[in-house]
Length: 467
Image (tube, one colour):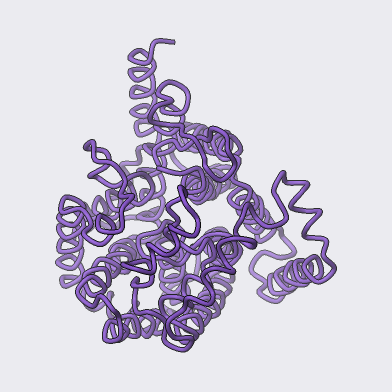
């Protein structure tokens, strides 16, 4: 098919998805478009690259950054802060309930002091707070569950079909040579097959959540056309996920889908103890596979090398001794700057490695043992919040739990806890969303079902504030 014709068909299809999914019965804030644009950027390519700029492949370019990208993020961040000031009571309540996240960001700010590049570190810290700001804009909406649904739809309806279009009809944009595996790989709207994989698995889980909800709630208005839109998005997502051949993202999607389906079972639905037992069983199974050495066979079955495509044999042994301070690290987002980055590029030429390809090692290099410990605290806190949410809303709680646990897995092979990275951003969104939903348990004015309907946007007593 001619690429121009394909573009027209895909554009009409994307518009059709938005049309099918419309729901005039809910009115989320217009401010929700700021997180949507934020995640459009994080889930694809930097604005400067879309405008024709090349990805930075020199040490100086990495340190300087792009003024266009900086301006876009500053405008979105300023807009998000303005919204939160108007919602300050709800925002402060969510932050107070998620104190480990606040502690982590305060420690990151403190680490600027011992960074070799404090000016760059503080700029990156300010930009990194945007992940928290955008998550707060979503969860402090008057109807946070409805806001989450619209966020997933608006982000997914654009990024996933656009990736399919670029892969099939614009290979010079949607494909590239992968120096790790020595063959051509698909990238879609992103710059790397692994980034495409993580963007797709997260959005596909969101589509699955919405499809399961629509399938179960047969009395919902406009159910059939919304279900068609979400199933179409899910189908595109699954196709892209396995076309990208990103094993970690494939596994995370399967694991996340399994958790979402299991938490919906009648014998488990709303029973935290049963969820604990399932999670513990999965942890013990993974531990047994690792201890017995069976992980080698598992990796080979997935078509992967036992050294995780050079991570365990080349990258990790090189980086671990380079940590400037085991306790404190190099300072927030400071390890991959200056001479250290050049040293890595000289040791592993032509790959332009700019991350540790392990989230926990990445944290250790930048923030030391303290930083790793704080993120583990965030994960434990998030798990507890998700379990509380599962008791109140098993469907949404199951999705939030899937995000928390899959990020733990994803962090083993990729730097999943970095600022402005899809897994980290959605981890914060999941934890904050679960914490706000779990507060329903303490509200005794209405039955749980009535409160959930109000939060989901299924009942309206008047126009919703756009603040």
